[in-house]
Image 1 (cartoon, helix red, strand yellow):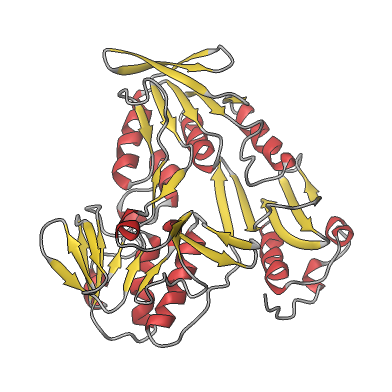
Image 2 (spheres, helix red, strand yellow):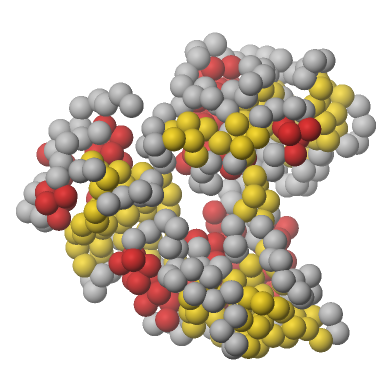
Length: 406
């Protein structure tokens, strides 16, 4: 029984069949749509270069041919661990041998007066993306609250559509939680060069409206910005309610072990909702990425199919803004040294992060080879110095990447 039809839930069902699991599989999701790929929602879908059918993870007949019972538009409201059953909103209970919670996360809401006005929108689902696409087409002045991945991706789309765009970010620089200052500055210049206004170190204090519709955004520095539309991307919170109400341990998400199992060994949690031990993070972590969701799904599929497997994949991420692709490998938190390859002027730049002399992360702008090599170097625990990374005459592909056990 799999609760959640996002990337993690879908991949679990598909991987179970690939692993030879022959018992019944039920995949349950609240959205009415069949499982789809979320990253395009803030990029090609809103821009109009992709449609709903093109982002489906598999066509509808996939579920029939793989004997996956897909229940869309259905909500799970409770778990009875003793009876090994889930309760669904439409009535009745469904039994499970193994239960996978792939319930994802929800948008963090903007806690200011006027935050509930018409025209203040969030992006998480296909339905929300469809609505945002329509409203962006109608708007001229758009304020984006949040200078992280989602906010900047939406700003890039709105800017490409010729809209007047302002981004408001509370931290001193964009994407500050995840990238080095040189990367932040590159993307700030990328956006401002396209006419987007970026205001950092400022918070929204109030949203003003007229007749129930947004009109202005007031900021902590005293400025006021006209807006026909406000797009909010200030992070997410994990959906832990089902697990919490079932008495399972909760931390920064649903707590699981290295096998992605909760304290109830019949219940797994994966994807955006799960907090798990990760050697590359140096502790427990909750990650919001397609890679993490898919890799965790493949891992627990092996365990459920009878091949108990620990999860130890290297995290990696990406964002597309205008024609620029940023690819990230590893987790840079806690780094004490940064070196670069390439240069920002050529729009080809890689940043290598070190902690205690060890490579822990690589961010690459339009340098996909660096990204792929970086993933291998970090995953293997390869021995190399910051000086080698900074020296373009050193062929990183020749650095030994012997298997490394964390």
